Image (tube, rainbow, N blue to C red; front, side, top):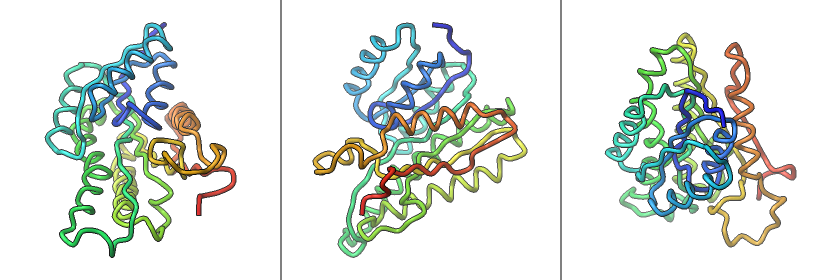
Length: 241
């Protein structure tokens, strides 16, 4: 396999959309760096992808990106590889359903949802920005959600965090326009990942993680003169209601 000399960084890459994105860029010949909370899941990922994609270069580190110190440690790990970052995919996140009125009164659920869905992207992106700005190119994706643009009755603090993540992405887009760095918010509807385990619905009612990854790769593959600012992907039959 001929390997490109620019690095793809994907947070939360061991499962679901993150794993599909990691696999898609590896198949295109890019080296990839990724993280996940479980070292065992990362070891399984590396073994499976080594069999599927001979010659692929995958760098992994365990990290809980709801913790600022782990975000800093992962960013340092990426920078220490000494390979220019071409793409950053902020994919790490977690979904806890429920109504705001039923959440703990101490605000702990909101703080947790903000930490894993918003601050993880903020805390990984900022240390990588100087290198991206210096090279005058690159592409930052944030994996938002249809919950970033639509309030759901059972969305609770998750919906707040995903709305904030879209706001972060929009601000980043405006700031980085003159720099040559493209910024894209990806807003998938219900996607067939571990978050939906146990739901008694047919697979065709969900977006496939591989389709999200293909959309991300296609968006990246446009010329530097064009950017898809928001990529909205829903199941053919619409959101689950």
